Length: 111
Image (cartoon, rainbow, N blue to C red):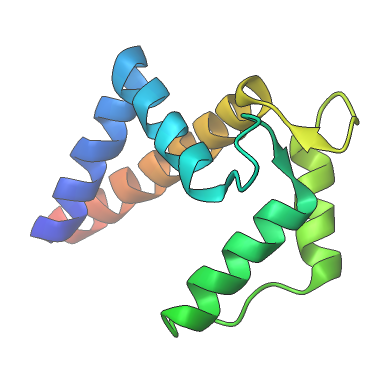
């Protein structure tokens, strides 16, 4: 339960602290952005997912089709690149969803 509470606190901080959230986004982009143009291409994201999943053995990478589907949802202006702003919107939604799930988990665990 302690790990759930720590994760919840970390997510809450990111959602409430714009500076922390921006730093978090910059760290993500720095990990993925191979050509350092501050934009994320499909190929860069695909390479990153393959590296993470295969190199660390934590998961199977998503199929190219599934990854393309997710990429297209995030790429709001449909220019085949994910900008800082597009990534911010997507990550904010993801973090809000995770925060809500962790809140529910903590409620169930404390009942």
